[in-house]
Every structure is written in C-alpha cells, then in structure tokens.
Image (cartoon, rainbow, N blue to C red):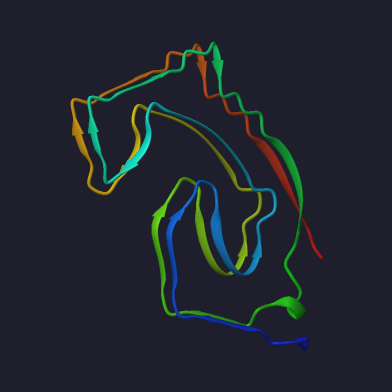
Length: 164
C-alpha cells in the first residue's frame, strides 16, 4: 500500500503548567470518540496562591436529599483505524513537561484510539486548593455533606467500532 504523503512533526519543547479535569494533549493520529465528564465541586473558599489568610471561615453545607445523580447511558459508533493516507510518519519531542495533571487527564503521543472515556466525580473542599507558599492564621474550614443518597453514578455505555 502506498502512502499519499509523508508528514513529520518536530517540537523542541512542550511545557504545560496544568491540564484541567478530563482533558488532554493529543499529538499524532488520535481518535477519542465518546468522551464524557460529569463532576460536582463545592468549595467553601476557592483557591489561593502565595497568600496570607487571617481569621477566615470557610463552610460547605451540602445537605441535599439526593445529590449528583448521573445516569450516563451512551452508545458511540466510533470509526475504526485510519487508513495509511492520513497517518503522520514521525513525531519527535525533545521534551514534554506537565506540572499538574488533574483527574482523568491524558498526554498521548503517537497513534491513539481512546474510545468512550468516562469520568465522574464529586468533591467537597472547605478551603479549595492552595499552591505556592501560603500562610494560614486562625483559619476555620468546615465541610458538612450529609446527603441521604450521595453521588449515584449509573454509567452504562456501549461502544461499537465501525471500520472505515
């Protein structure tokens, strides 16, 4: 089988400080059909970086009767492998640097078939996130999450690969 064209990619450096929740960096011949993410996040304060927190009070009260019910029923008809006419022959990186990778993230280089990814999560944070050098003086964080039913996930998915 002859190729219609040859392709080449060259990067000296790829630097990423943060990859967010259920996201990714995809380089090359990628197929990522049917990705889905559901999340719930409660933060009493939020986030801080290089800060001083003095006499803070952060509270999360999440007392729903039913909370974060996810019924993710999905059927994906994903294309199969690609033909040789649209294949990248060479991908070269001198370096790939990722500082922080959050929940359900991906750094994928080359030929990737990542079908039907699912990510579901719930988080409750009294303060949130802190990075760098932070000072906390007389801080009070409280989380109360007394649901009767909490974070029900019924994820039934079916992927069908269709050859191209």
